[in-house]
Image (tube, rainbow, N blue to C red; front, side, top):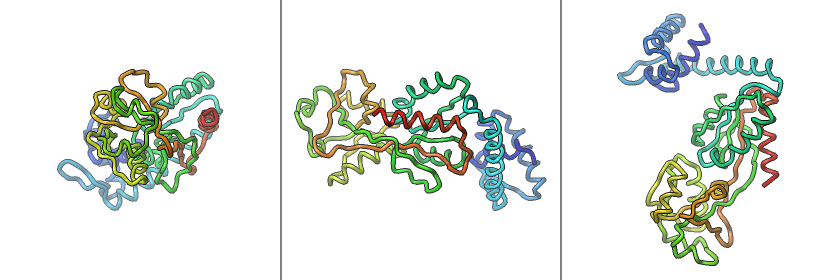
Length: 293
């Protein structure tokens, strides 16, 4: 049994399809099929149940998946531990889309200048996918917003940030001295789709204040939310870090009076994986950014 066979097997199990797995692996589908067939011959039983357009794991495949992940994780951790000099190496950072483009650039520039031999790979994805990637060791740490529903991950809170009401400049509320949450209750909202936790933060805050925001449009990008608000499609709430870099005069941001909506930004990692000194240095830079807020 070869390591490449295990990697190929795990990719097919993840994608549930030989064609998509072959594309991800950048090998031909026949070569991938031969590798899996050879693996099954060695094991003496199939690891996949073949269907017309997909595959699913057999009982043997389910067992092999868990063991293959453990084997590859041990090898990756061993190599990382042997080569750990705190100056070079690869670290994989995950972040949700409402954090990555606003929070990470300055930290990455600072870290790159301090550790020029380090290779930092950034993966932007939704909370559920990043939790899975962090648990399986595909990313070394993830920067997310609470709550983080993963019992086996270590979680450290970084900071709280306010969510600001965003309006078109000519909106009646833009000239109001104090805006209460009740002022926006009858207004249409533009929100991110259900895959993004920011919408959960907004809806949860509103429900705690006894109203359900009416979403007239949903999108997958925060920039699109901002543009739709500029076009008077509705109002929304935007994190402080996104507000801070928005130079457009086509929208205005206002803070709510009284209790303000917020979200808590945190970093999560798998404590059962090897934690390199380089990775700890990156976490320390995140903590420094926390203290500067």
